[in-house]
Image 1 (tube, rainbow, N blue to C red):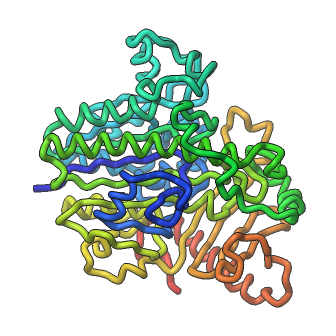
Image 2: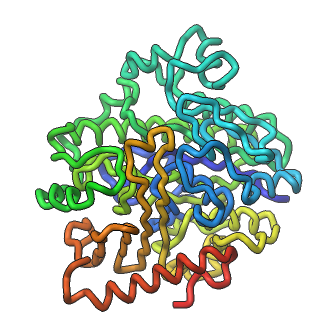
Image 3: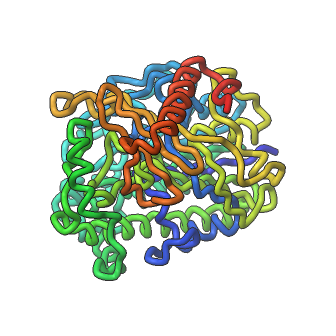
Length: 464
């Protein structure tokens, strides 16, 4: 019997937001339980530091540039490859979704659905807005059925009841699917949090004292470093953390994640109540991270710091995969799609560039080794509606176990970090003459990887 799949994807959640994986300041008992009962990858990387390209990548197993899903405000999904949900649905998996899809622009409009995304159940909800008309936005419609309007959330988010929150609503729809779907099923739970604005219910915000939190990674030198990159797209300008109350933002961010964690607990309870936990694979991940004040930046854009490109990735299926395994192998989110196909004994199409993680999950491969390096792309990715505000930047990242190289195409500045000596990414070695040969080697490796990624499929992703 093939497993059910509960695929939880938060929005803009960093890798370092789980207590069981080292963050003593946050309370995440249910995510911790997944870590204890499954396999947690501590070095999982998105393929773009912004929503739509990342989602296009992990839903197809292809790099954003290869699947023509590069922009956050594209008119519609390019249909360049079927989604993994479609491939699973074709074999009888009953697929559902609650929350975001975001394979096309959704700012101020209803996102056009793909021609065939594989979802039988589709409860679409994007961000908060007071502009959604009846029938356009499932969460807004549900709020109206409860006697509320979205503008209440926008006007007073602190005091908006947690039981009416989009996170809770997504979970309610997931529990509906868990209880009624055919077997086997897949449920995509695409929560909007902890995306900006940082607006948790007050009952959750009160659990965190900003004064006790560590605050962002920041040095005065960041002001000069980010000013040198000012011509390269980012959603917010560099500022000192005290100028935007970074610790308060961190507290709100952690509070939003704790609300997610509580709702994860509700989904676990539903699986156990219905007798399905032993045959349900749970995946917990996020589409990309959040700068959260690191280096003086908030939100996302054309940067590749660890807090933005490194995300949680946990698989839990007690009795079927390893339990309590923490892997520091370099993995990419595009590895999820071939893993799901592998678990269902389905071959990955030749175009898929991801590599199945199932051997590691089953204890059949070295948990410390999966890829020699990981890649990330940014191809003029910010919303086309706001295109006149941005420079249409292009950039690529290559990161191996020790070094990270970032090339901002068409610009003289770049970045090279030694992550062993400088894990906070403060000391840019790009112009250091002692690292000139290494920079050249990594640039050639990055160029080769980019060229080989155009020829879709896994065999030639790396020759190193």
